[in-house]
Image (cartoon, rainbow, N blue to C red; front, top):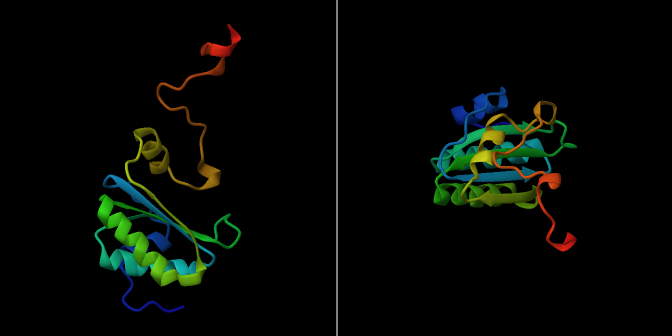
Length: 137
């Protein structure tokens, strides 16, 4: 696959650079192949002011590829539309999270790789033994 004049953010992401989430929204795109995702994300980051947070190319994903892009809600939504159009029938999923919870933001800033996923307990988490059951009375 050849991408002429690849966006610098995509270049760095392919080499493993991760960026922190920026903006209020997160756009997640999954394709059935790495080349489809690369072409789609390249078009999206060239066309909208989103940040390419992370790119996973067939890494423990059964050949699939995933990209996380963040930014303002309208920019993230536009980026998803561009990715969907560019990926065509190789698009498997696209999701828009409009307002990220601070706990989810913190967890995603650590990375999405399965090997690096630590045990995480959000602030204010309830434990079953601490919560009284309404039906047990």
